[in-house]
Image (cartoon, rainbow, N blue to C red; front, side):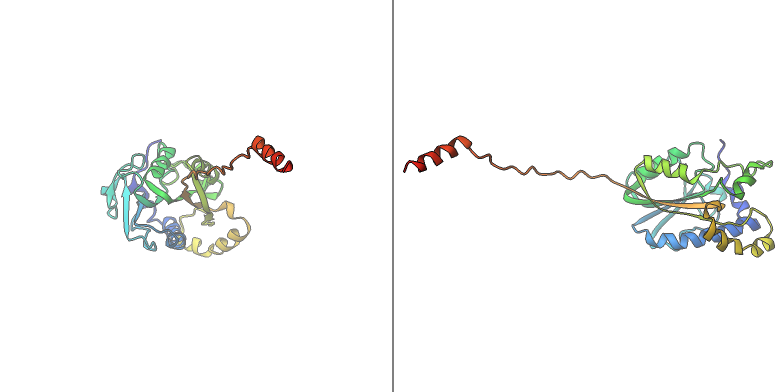
Length: 243
């Protein structure tokens, strides 16, 4: 799979549908990020302004593989080979990064490498089991975001589990159909509440928050008890009986 161009994806987010989705995703992140702590936060994938404004982490870095076309990027690099030291990042936001990667599992391996113990990864992706997934199946233009590979939530959870992550939060969002009409999308806003309560699995996108677990081995000290000298005990008892 050819990786998507960050500039083209950023252009799509300027469309009526893209703006509605970006607004909802910012709301979701504003709820999640304040609960993540540390010193360094890395966002992989950018479509415009940074989405990290609600985070309490002071040092925030936005990286994209096509940084010249996205002015908000702070760093240029490849998600499959992050230019970051091992065990140095407290939280990573993968913003629709896996759908357009040739090797999404390698990206997750890199995230596991750079995260500190107990660090968090936040992944936002498109849901194939939704009206958005149907729209992708009917894609005939080959344009973003419909040319990406939409990954199921359970598949990503399985990949994270194999890398030793503990999934803490999963949530589907954006239940309106993928229509590029701002007025109609506004009128259909009631679907957000209805589907979120009745059938959340059909949301057009989802978020996963997972923590990097570190298994520690606690040595168990043996409880040594001196064995009673049975022979000497019997001898002492016998000698006392003859006194």
